[in-house]
Length: 248
Image (cartoon, rainbow, N blue to C red; front, side):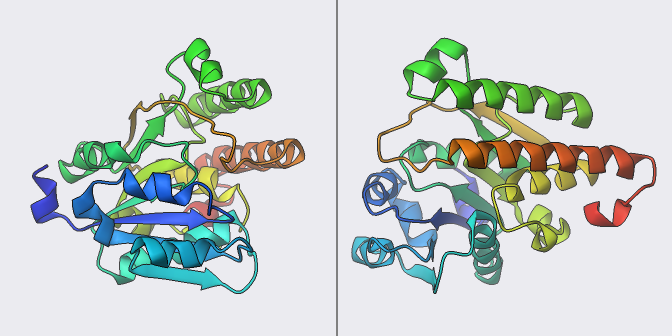
């Protein structure tokens, strides 16, 4: 990949109790990129940080207590920017996402084709369900992704993926620091990026839900869905001049 020579890729892993899946995920990363991994342990009690260091991950940061998925990503992105990343890859360390595709996805950003690239787990219903995605998650994903595409004018296949690639410019200019510290961090960041005119693309990745994969609870999914719809309503308001500051 040509961008390896011209772009500095940093892979960030927001981790919480990931000791059973971290090794698999990390070992699937291209060997040339493994020295560019940042793992932030969000107060795990299973030795995630210790395993990360044992695997050879150079940049391991730990929160003293669990601060939330969004707060974890904030620490990830601050560190990636501090390290001088020009392309930032956010990868969940839970085996759900194929780390071998990092270079392929990063190339879209390096070439200037997209400012953000997302891994789309849902090529079709049969494949997603066969990969282990719970039915309620599948249908909630389809509904919320459809609503987001209609409101934002995008054409994305999976708005909720844990495999995302950003250009440095996006993370320097989108105000993600003001996002909530829970799972709504992700749709807030993407919605703000759309509002600011950044180009978001996606490409298919395998859908797999191993038994040890991290997963938001059913109750958490309901809260997430409500918060995402609120963000989208705020986006509609901002388009007519109400509450624009949130998106700038």
